[in-house]
Length: 125
Image 1 (cartoon, rainbow, N blue to C red):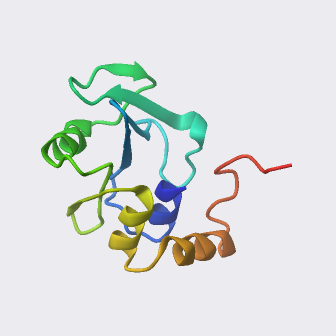
Image 2 (cartoon, helix red, strand yellow; image 1 turned 60 degrees about the vertical axis):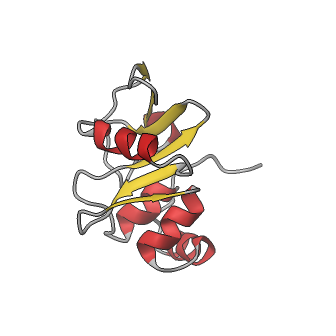
């Protein structure tokens, strides 16, 4: 959802990605998918320590994000903003808030209103 929110707000660099660190692995949109249409099925997984590809095809330039996460122990998320700044944060919610300058809840509500999240996650029953 964070990737879709930032992509539809035109706040990611053209080849930018959003990455999240969970434990020892990093999740990122595959190198073969658009940020505007990615789904949970389009995620590549790599090991932080050595960049070993575990699942999927990571995007070119992933080393930039891995280096940022390794260099900032408190960082759990990173994104390459439209202005070329690599932003790190302690969570995806914080990352979106920093890049957009508004809260996650506001950003998510706006993305829903413009249809940016259609197909981004399964509907709850």
